[in-house]
Length: 291
Figure: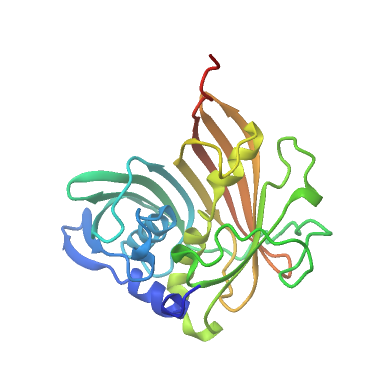
């Protein structure tokens, strides 16, 4: 990664998530946002950045004691990374414990995303976390690396270490198809706690579509059209910015040029931070017919 890409994560995410208020009539709030460099160096508007901005916009529309716990997002069309986007938040419901928000992202009048979020006043009950699988390589292990996203503009805020998954997979569905460790380039105290749910949402889009390809025998070199269609995400526990986190994806099924993948984010000490499902378009180009 070039030196120009090495910026502290706290600086990048503070700049990304500094939404500019446009209007608010008490029912609908509108904001403007723009990708900072180096995130804007990516040709398309990264899906994880959409998820982070959607989360932030929803959080700005509720009381401070409510945190996001569930998100369902439809990726409708691709956006241009250098251009600003507009977010519209509709206050659908506010109850004693839960709030519901609808969020759309547009760019130049074109719809990019449409999301539903649920936010809750946290309750100190039933904290049970299943541990990560035993035997998986740690961030400093000697297993073979698979640096697909390492050094990319969209991961410039992270120390990212992706590993080959062949020692842990048998080729069937539900096997680990992508596995990486990620740690923010920052200190624990540098990242505002209010931004941490947004960063987790950003991380949840680190290559789920690539993980889905395995079930149909496709790789990064397979010709065709591949894109995120929809993305569901559940927050469980708080991100500790200075800690390593494990991101893993597992393919579930594929049909009609769509592949479904599940995923999870864990802390290195085994706390289950988040759960992910994503459906990806996998329209593989057929080989040329033989003469």
